[in-house]
Image 1 (tube, helix red, strand yellow):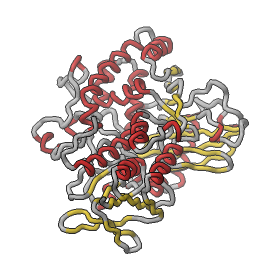
Image 2 (image 1 turned 180 degrees about the vertical axis):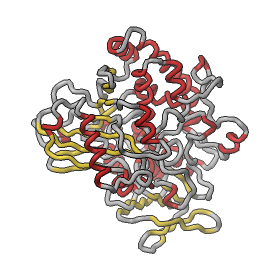
Image 3 (image 1 turned 30 degrees about the horizontal axis):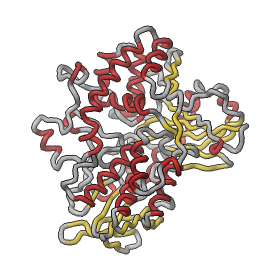
Image 4 (image 1 turned 180 degrees about the horizontal axis):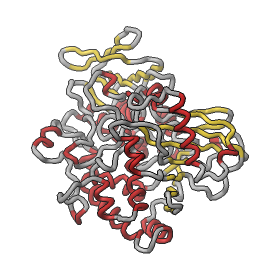
Length: 493
């Protein structure tokens, strides 16, 4: 039996901890905050509750597998998951509204043809079919296996570590193969282009630079559906924490790790903020590598959220998620990704209106979350009150397109900026990492789970295979496999 020290109690770190404990290891988790869950947090006030991180789950099979592998009780015995239908409603600047059914190819085709124009649905479906090629070609090596030891060397030789599928023209080498180029070539209609690009933007990806393989994000959502956990996604974090406790994982909260302890050229424990040292046979880090002094690129994009407590009942048939697209695409991309990011634009916003009694004090009220992708703290000064309040007002104004009479219904609101995200999660600048993507010579990969320092392993959204609830869960499985089976581990089959 070996002792494993885990830094952070985020979803990827806890996924690794539960699997390692089942494998017979002694696992101790050290978390700087007072509660587990990392980015999957919760705001509770006056009977209203809100998820402060992800609001929906995609690829629930990742957590179903985790719960099966770590105990007899399946995931659904701990968390009630239900599919969101429609999956999303989209409101475009020209007034077009389209509601897309959940996990239904035929239904999506019909909805797009009816809302946009005959043939629009088929064009979209053709692109999704081509994105499926990329998914089929890269799913296992990109998501279910550890990174090769030297992905940079492969890129230097002109080979993508995980080249995107090139069949049927979507990923052909002639011309730039960015998501923007794919969208313009295959979709033409600016509303379809905005629909495709919204999946990238939601993950903090610039469609002008993200590889064409980013189309898999739309494919995944349409194919595997969008799922809501009753009580909010925070309920999933609490269930995973309970599973860890049942497997005898130790948790130490208010215990900030400030550095690694090395012995004989390998990780041998961690140093805490109080000066004490915790020894271990291996260390699993579930935090932003920059916090441990590792050289990493600049912080990813972040999330700005406004939580609204509303008087009045949620109307029956209201979509759970509505995307209100920005009126000026170029202005938004410049504000979020440009050389001089700012907060003076009117952003695309995602409006979440869950039909869940646990989120509100009674049936005569409603809890609504409005989010936008923004530049991280440091590139924009989110501590500035004028910047913060002005942006929040523009977000709420945009959300009014999805919530009629919104301004008159607001009881109170709370704002969470990237500065708040940084304080809650420890991520530099409040960055929220994106999922790993194939192509682009490996530019959209994350650090491998097996760190260069022997005995150190990386889990969570800042490690392979990247950000998002499902990807974080996958990272935990990869780390556990590497520790249990060694560097020769190639993923579960």
